[in-house]
Length: 107
Image (tube, rainbow, N blue to C red; front, side, top):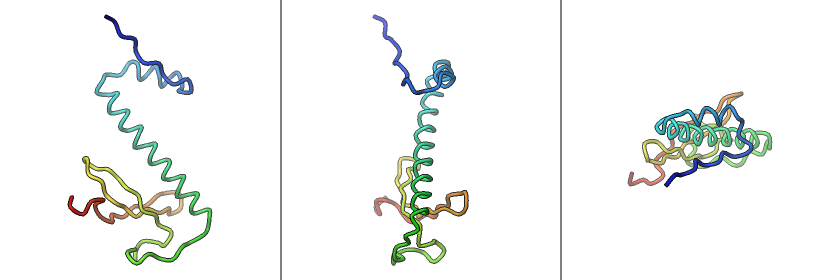
């Protein structure tokens, strides 16, 4: 019995498809993990930029540390299968993060 490889998305550039077709299973899993993290990062940057463009700064939350600007948002990062809250905000062209705490305080 032979199995057909999956069909790539039609909007994926040929050079990416070719590189993925030549990769080992381990490299494909690493690439998938990296691609997912990179997509989340770019979406978060776009959201932070959009929020910064809105110009509406809400009241400063009570649990916001003094060294975190009021425009900061809370994001969740997964590190070693654990989830953590981070304050995140834009400083010029970069995004800055500050640890807030675990998503589940029992972790």
